[in-house]
Image (cartoon, rainbow, N blue to C red; front, side):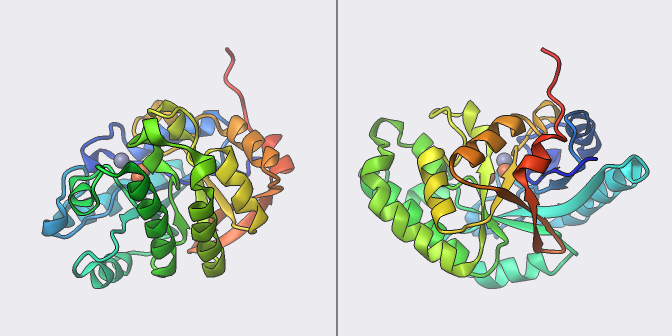
Length: 278
Ligand code: ZN
Ligand code: FE
Ligand code: FE
């Protein structure tokens, strides 16, 4: 019996992904998954810059892409749900009302909140000249994103390490990270384990094992996503991700539906995954 969903995937509307949701679904299904949530990058205000995301006028097209794929797969024991990856930038003019409006434009199952420190709008405000301060600021922003109340989960929560790989020292930064995680835990917002980190400059999942352990100590629910931007990556490295979660002390993983979390036992989920013949 299938149990697990891939809770993070993209569509060509963001201009840096290829393949339609039904193609991602084929790969995720072959890996033993029960479903996937499409979470393409949200439209943002003009001043934020809209490279790498759908334009506001493309939003109806996004809804159509997801619902067509869902209909195609509906009778094949695989579910495709509507979600969104929404950017958050503390202090950005009008961000609150903007997100509120976008998030109420459709019946989303899951809204992932993202700090994207690689974007020019972020780098203009927070300088990379002082990498340690940049890293500390990033973890402060994660906490603010959780406290904003707009999101079900916080995505790829140590992405900053890829911008500052030479000075990344998770042990040295841990006091700041712990403070951030305390605040996130207090909100009840979930956090993501994102397997695409294995392909980045610091080749480990986001977050890495040390942060995952601290999340578990605080009872922060974890949601699993591939962040696939090509169909071949849907559901990628999920067996490994579940092993990382268990090593960090986790016994459960969470899925969102109608924006409400549901827990699954990792031991039960593991037995349902299909490893590709290698
Ligand atoms: Zn993307
Ligand atoms: Fe992202
Ligand atoms: Fe993403």
